[in-house]
Length: 186
Ligand SMILES: [Zn+2]
Ligand SMILES: [Zn+2]
Image (cartoon, rainbow, N blue to C red; front, top):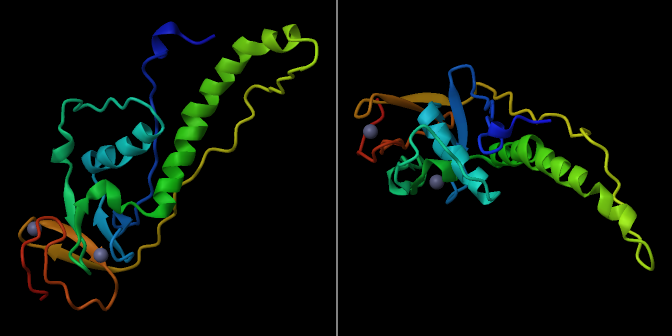
């Protein structure tokens, strides 16, 4: 039996893989090309929240009152597309988050639901016989994110004091990924 107070508070332990330089791979939703930014936890909370909300879950972060509009935005280093950081997650990361929520939250919840309904199957005789095939605790393996190879070249933006990674050989770095300031590649 679960502790009653654990019902409205669920702790998740996400483990998102960054490469060995602590960069998280991202894909620009406009041009489809990949770049990376150094991972930070606040950014990750923003990245994860929409995935949970899409599943109809309430997300309580430490900073619950934060307005949607204060989510950090990123400028694509290739096409300058400006969008919320969470919209630049790779398909692999989104897939991982969805499987994570399914494995850690939806399935255990369904498990509890069905164990409460076990009686119904036996009571509904007659024409339609409902049999609930239900076995507790057979969940798919915990999804794994990564590993992320340490590819791409590091670009340091002096305006923000932050680093990003762009494709090797990409010479047209002319705008800060974080603030959009015009920059010159040195
Ligand atoms: Zn782009
Ligand atoms: Zn900047």
